[in-house]
Length: 136
Image (tube, rainbow, N blue to C red; front, side, top):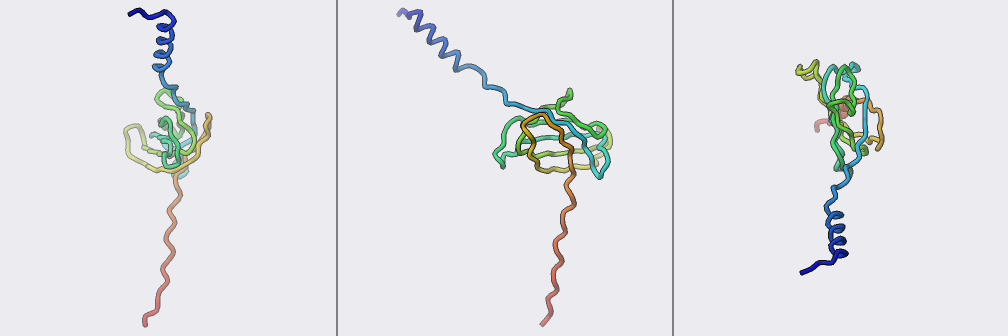
């Protein structure tokens, strides 16, 4: 069976178009300060996870904290998807050292390079005192 050059060319274009790789999701640089109890965290990590419960998806980002600062563009960092995000901070007293803090919170990050200072969650509110009921 003989295939015309036009048919062969059309077939190769169709096959090549179907095999092209998906475009890589856009990620953004986020940097800032990391503090706990008002003091810079000596060492640790900041993990940025798109909040799927809010319909966000994309790459998860991570950055190392050094001397109270982090940057997802550093040699060991990864960019962030932006949008509704769950931020998890793990702080140590030194590299490989004792755990100082671990906290998580939600934030809506811009879909652009930005600065974001980590914030420890405030103390949980104590439940209101129960009213005494008189005995009968």
